Length: 260
Image (cartoon, rainbow, N blue to C red):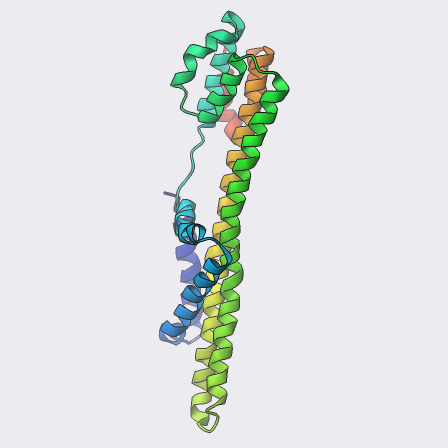
């Protein structure tokens, strides 16, 4: 569970509540079911119009990923690739074949399978980068659905406000109700802004971070696979792979993988 997502949502909505109460208002003043349905359901149905049914229904599964911490096991991958490098230099590339079935990472397994099969390095790079680019494209499609909802919600909020103002203007003879009706009409704008800025835009940013991390790990695997094929010294291979990690992560990992 990604605690930062829970803290972020609770804190953001908590600040809205604090702002309302500290300004002398009440929570009831910003609660309105028709406004909520107009913004949330209205923008969701508009989202369905802009996408396929499977994508529209799958958006909740996409959102759920922002509450999970993805694990890519960089240290384990580096350790395995170093072990493969040592074995390949000692016994030859064909000796790696027996080790492939025990690999959990399918991307690394595919790359090393190509190495064992004697595939040219450029072809290996092209094939692995093709799979990487397709993964990035799938991730971008999912993130774009979130961005679409973020774009639609404020518009539905404004639409709800306009509907409220039309109703208010039709009853101008009741001057006592103008203020309350105006406030109620603006609630939909508030809801639209909250859906976009407190939920969808942060969800999109977190998913982009996950995509960037997975992309980095797969680029590291490509570098490792090609280095194993080229017969690079194991310590040189480790230094190449560690370059993909942040300085803090590198310190923790290099104590294990570069120890004498």
